[in-house]
Figure (spheres, one colour):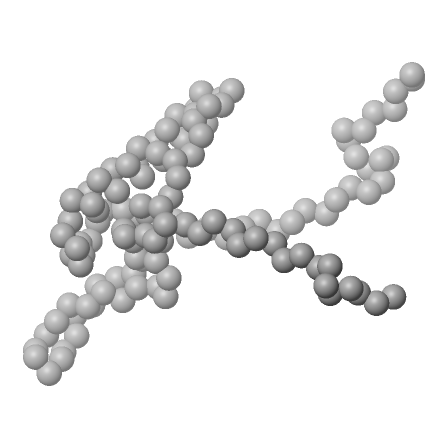
Length: 125
């Protein structure tokens, strides 16, 4: 069976995000000797985190605790954006935030046999 390439449609280009102007970079400061004397340099991971292009998360939830956590995330985002946009273009500063390292859990096997699934109940219908 041959494919008719004259009838193949190419999906439209997806909408691109606005270019970020504010970034968070994860790394550390180190003092190094250069030709001009000792200098402090920031060594960061290869990729930063764009901040000002992030969207707030939804805060509506049936769980009051989850809704409060989501609201706190939005507040943190607003504070970082406000502080960053108050800086002069090209200015850098260290901020007092913590970095969490997290490894994703392994996928759990899917229960394929109903007799092994504790949530399956035989109904008399």
